[in-house]
Amino acid sequence: MPKKKTGQRKKAEKQKLRQKEIRTAKDNVTLAKYPSNSAMECDKCQRKQKNRAFCYFCQSLQRLPQCAHCGKVKCMLKTGDCVIRHAGVFTTGLGMVGAICDFCEAWVCHGRRCLQSHACTCPLQDAVCIECERGVWDHGGRIFRCSFCSNFLCEDDQFEHQASCQVLESESFKCQSCNKLGQYSCLRCKTCYCEDHVRRKGFKYEKNKPIPCPKCGYETSQTKDLSMSSNFLDFLFVCVRISALLFLLLSQLRMVSTSSEARAQPHQDTLALNSC
Image (cartoon, rainbow, N blue to C red):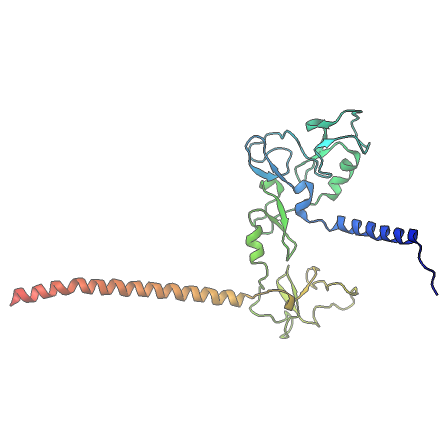
């Protein structure tokens, strides 16, 4: 019979599980919650934008800059790793900052941990919009990730891209290599694969994890769990719109012809009376 766990042992196991959840939660933070991608309102022009060292529109310096790594606006000397010592003094503004990140264009505070680790872990290192191909320095808005294909999106193209992201490049849901029904779909390549062609030979797959795409390596999803559509539906939609426009044009032409005939009828009657 196994020994009964003591209260101290149960408490230690719960604390271990909690610490593991905290470590995994740090890796799964959404891009919108990072301090380097937080919303900022300029003190001078009152325009909303991404957290920056200088305003994107009027190039003015902000009164209370925010650290792009830890998110603080005031250094209270609690950690003790400040590069610039300020014993007993709380620093704000330019007295708190230490550098500007080349990737996210935001201030980094003078803490040693932030200065050493932010440039290597900046979430906006290769943040280029998949639609307009603009980087952080080319527009003033925030950066987001598509919830389907996980590509970077700017604030202007965010909703427009996600509305049309689940559309296949082919005209059917068949596998790219055969005529079987594609059970797995890659939301980045916009292609479907069957059970046989989604797996590569000589590649080890982990259990209880999504199968990577054989073309790009992105995680595939089952087609039945998605609201995927094909280009064939778009083609039908365009045909319906064209037919509707042609119907409206023909109806307007008929109305114009009937009105011209109605106008010409009394003129013909008057000519007939004059001839009599």
